[in-house]
Length: 350
Image (cartoon, rainbow, N blue to C red; front, top):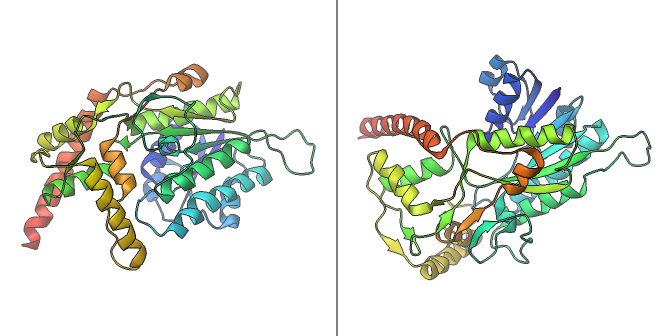
């Protein structure tokens, strides 16, 4: 088998790449930057940008399966950039898969495509796309997901050669684990600087997805597309076994890392207002340092967002590989080392 991992040098992409290599697949990794550590493991590494169709086509050429993990997921980028990467980049991927006759496409989506302005407890795939999004990230990811699913069973236009592309989309929620470049470093830095505030009543529950569980789910979905194809044309939530109470989880992590727990609070309503103010400020001053608070971030911190992975279990056998306890042990080993390095850097700067 031959696979291409678009974004294979990213947090999730690296785990997908390593798992594919470990089971003997030929793997091509496509990134904007070089990743010699993946090349040393046996991956073919090529550099390029998802917005460059020719580069994407070259990356997909000769592959049986493509994993599309590339996305702009920051919350304060210019709106144009989300559309360039998340929407037009995905258009490039679909077109390249069609023209090079890739058989299977697994797209990394997000539960945010189905999140509106209400709490979600044990949500499933019957959740509709919201009529309105508060941020370009979920809006563009929803557009891309719909394009990927619509491309299922697509063939090369005007040809009747038996080729059909099979697609599916996976929605891991809040991917975490050692090496996380997003959630954990921001929590750690916010705690060090005393900027963290508990938003709302602090009782919201969320689903998390340990990074190895997310990668495992991607491989299982790809195997199903290669086989019976029960997941073809569908989107699936994948996450860890049970949801957590977000602020209890955050505080337990901070304490284990030797930091003070978050005790100061801000109401959901006031945080929403401040988020809107920050959005207006960022829009008026697009070239300055953006303010990180937005209404989308506020809702992520204050509302319950938990999901069922029952459909993924039914259709392609998804079950988490790593328990939350084992995942936390691995995260703490990495987090303590990260904390030690940051503290050493801070001492040198004094």
